[in-house]
Image (cartoon, rainbow, N blue to C red; front, side, top):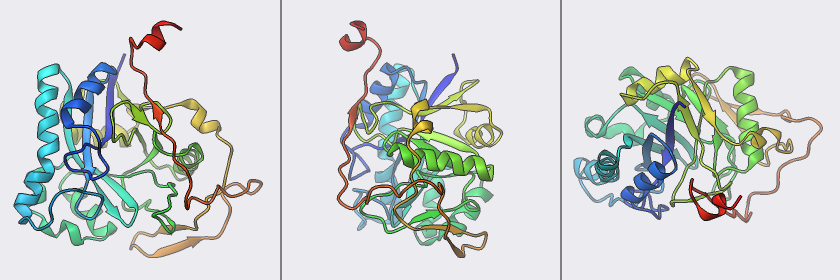
Length: 288
């Protein structure tokens, strides 16, 4: 069996929407059979709970505390823990891997970069940029924004997405040859929208998070996901879709993704029920 990596984890320490502690997340993933996790808390312009009145260095230290707490527990129980972050542009999100807290301290202007500037700066220092859940539709958003030129890969399978959103992302990534990742986007242990954990399975243990970029872009991994996501009913997005070109110019897409299908349900006010993740050895599993 390969090396199982969770790529998208939030905790109560740095994400305002988090519910579980870093140690609880580490223990949960160890019990679930994963070998490593990436702590990717919501960053400065996203749903963070870190006080913005702190100096920049103080803010980064407080933000990175979740990673260090998870790593301490991971070292104790035998789980690899890696640092990352999730930037936000009004609901349009990117996962950044391969750079650490000291890099953030040296780049306080990171909070003012646009998507193109972010990609170029992260890329120039060997980092890895993944557009998170690119076809997500929620009531805090106004459109879908795709960045084929300002990301190295797309997170096409997200365990807290609706299935049609994942199917749209997967099929569009295949169409344009975009490397793919999967992640749970978990905020509370045992809970994701589909009641499953997503991630990546690598052929070899991940020794350095900086290696993830090559592993994904060269296709040396497989998506941990539910295959049923790919057979979800085909639906066109409710929101308009904008693709950003190489120079960050907006290009409105005026074609349906599935000509014979209707639109998805209006996401404003849509219920978002969550499912419970079962672990190996749970009584309900033993009984089956």
